[in-house]
Length: 200
Image 1 (spheres, one colour):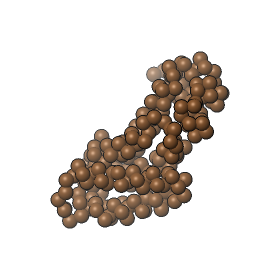
Image 2 (cartoon, helix red, strand yellow):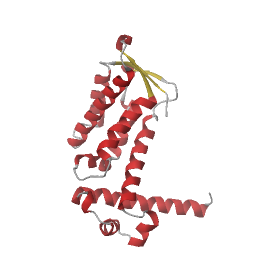
Image 3 (cartoon, helix red, strand yellow):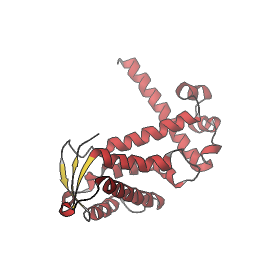
Image 4 (tube, helix red, strand yellow):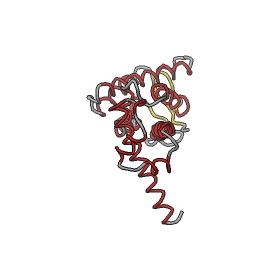
């Protein structure tokens, strides 16, 4: 990629970012179904032709926003680990939960989960993404190697974590990241002995 192509790509990414940000704010203000393309371009201070260079309609913008944010969530998980790394829950610490940091850094987006007329698919795809992360990226060992149905165990653990995340978001992130992560660590120690990061 030459400099001109790079600069064009950067401009396109910047424009998409602005359109997405405007869209998030408008969903909170008006609800998803009431938001129009005119609303989005006015809020982002672009014109309609700029919007149509990037998206064919509001639905495509919504799909891109949801997919990019949940893909980012999946990608964030492995940053503290190397492939094959085994971690004992007694050694978990703040950097172990990069997923929580990602949610907090992108809290304007994740706050959309609190709204009824919100981004289509968010209420179902966020929990299923967290479940997918538990299923695909980690191998767990239970306390004292207690034999369990591991599919059930991962579902139980991932949806429990999702419930905590929703509670945190619903309370406007009142608990600090550090306190929230410590609570998750303390709970993890009650049923998880260790896990191995196997990546995607």
